[in-house]
Length: 391
Image (cartoon, rainbow, N blue to C red):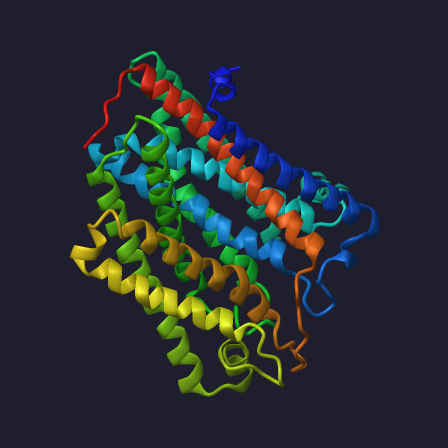
């Protein structure tokens, strides 16, 4: 049990947090047992909206997982030492995010045995097969790299040379997991909202904004609850990555809007109309999408102006805005907007049910539990080596 004894030692606040997460996980597990017995009919899914909140979270979290490359690539390929303290934190975040991705697919399948069909009957011409390969491969790579790196750090030695090819392989693999996820949607020609070649670049741009934004928030929390500090310079460099990624993401979105409305093709316009002004009397997503746009615009102002971006008191609020804006865009708008209206022009309302929301909350709680345990172990190793607070 590699250093796991460190995870069972903590303050009252630490155990209160663990207990709260376990309560949420327990409630969600009971709801999942209910779904297992009754079927997916207990969710808000229907014949017209076959992917909902589960797959929306999966799509968003694939980006969070892929974003680990934004600290791995500068550190290992360009010897950017500033990210040395952040790399293991980014890799642990990737492991937790990929695990959540797999769990969301698992609960969306309805019956667990259906997952075996992908393994026992592989179909190379199916994007779902390649998505499974990319996710499981990325999970293996990050788990291996993290284990070896932390083990070497505990022994105060350099990581062995044989791990470097796996580190280099993880960089393009990180790009592949979100690219393949975008191809899942591109491969559905009846859904014009997703039928765009820029979907994969949009996914990657949003991933490289949301993931590092979450990592910055986690670094801020680490500074508060431990004696380890990732360093102000590392956090500011990460915020610069968030800035450029968010600018590119917004540029891609505006390109989509121009293409759709300048061409005037009705079936393309209707998806955007549904999301931003409502369609056929259905406007339940309109407040969410305008909130996402407002958060994106405000966060861009705070990121682009160096005085605001480099202010570490303002930066956490900016990162929260970036994260929420992209979560709404990819976690609500992308999936529901792609299914509405249907290819026949019907607008079918989708609303997640209470059991569905609790299952989603439980999987997020599992992810945060993993992050908590992994970070506790990493911080224990680093504190034992005498890392100083880096102000």
